[in-house]
Picture 1 (cartoon, one colour):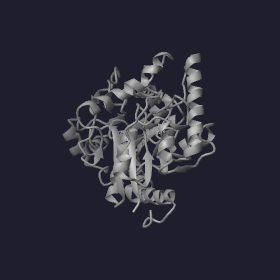
Picture 2 (cartoon, one colour):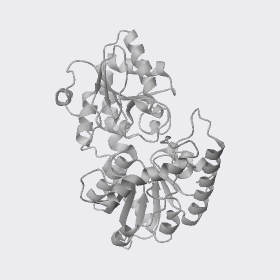
Picture 3 (spheres, helix red, strand yellow):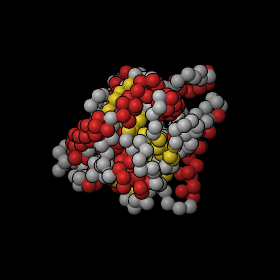
Picture 4 (tube, helix red, strand yellow):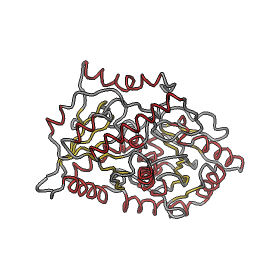
Length: 408
């Protein structure tokens, strides 16, 4: 039987680590021999390996900041969309203890797996790498610069890291797994990854956990008003990440209130949404478990995803699985999630006016919400459920091994 070892900086902090953890759990449930090693363990899952107590634990917490330290000279220490990947790692004993057949990398920045280490790892074992952002095939950046003018030192370092990646990848030849068709095309168009293999496989979701809960029960448990129409926005970074487009949603909310629409906004994630004028806002804070997330989606009438750029955001898939129509922009991998006009709406990029119009349509028409919600649930079951996606991953691992599952 094929044994897979997943490497991820976290097991549940950002969207990438949540997706990695769900894949690992789904593989285990399907009978695939899967293990997971992380730099910073957040969950209490005893199956996840990570540094324990003492020096190893404190060093693992320090590594992300140590890895960012040289960025001070380039004026990018505070830019969390930049990773230097210079900090050496010498402890890889988990490979000897687990003896996997396939190594599956996820989001491994923050000082966890430096680029140079891949040459050593790839000499021993096939490598699969899920691209949760663009960092694996760019230089320093997780996503392209937007309205920025990086300095000369930054540009030189960025180019140097690109060249290093090209040299290492040429010797290792890992297989890229991209959750969305958009990310696959971005990788194929890049200088770093253009000659390497890429396969599109979405992040799986447990549709037995993410499903529609009676809205009245969900609202009562979350202490939300029972009769007020609710729009939901969720993001790990909350309203503070420009890429997630909360400012566009704020504009849309104010436009809807100017039109006399009565509704509330439910938010989860870090940070405060700020002033929304006449729109009452209900903050759920950071939600730590999937069952509570399903309650949050079920309590809402409409889910909005106003991202300027995104890969295959968990929020869109989770909301769809819970039978909620999603209003978003036609950017990145979001069209892989939403069938425009059937399971939700796709607006023109950064059009706050169109975003407001589509949210308003759904708030005004409960029958439309019901029909789109049913279509969203069906789409989630057919494209993103464990039952559909996990067998595809299992088959991919067999192919990477080059043998049948019995021989690998």
